[in-house]
Image 1: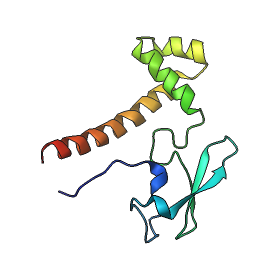
Image 2: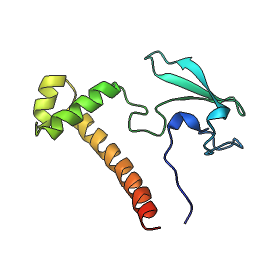
Image 3: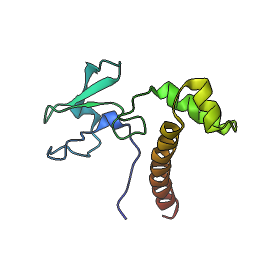
Length: 120
């Protein structure tokens, strides 16, 4: 089985046509400012494509801040209902469910990698 490593999404190029695609090479990636919402951006030195740091995470493409998402997850962990979260945070119940489903998929991927590492 191929060795898999955990890395930060800002340490690799996400452009599938780039020769550096998917390679963990922090020297190939440089900081490249911020978006309008202050999300840090990075650029691949090889293909010159620019990516936000949240690419490859559950926070990628969300309209809410990482802080809001994590606060909602914390409220759920404290056994608050989705309706209570909507009242407290003003975030729709459906939105929180979508975040949970997105997180579930990533947790399953991480679990598969960890289990594969432990069986070697």
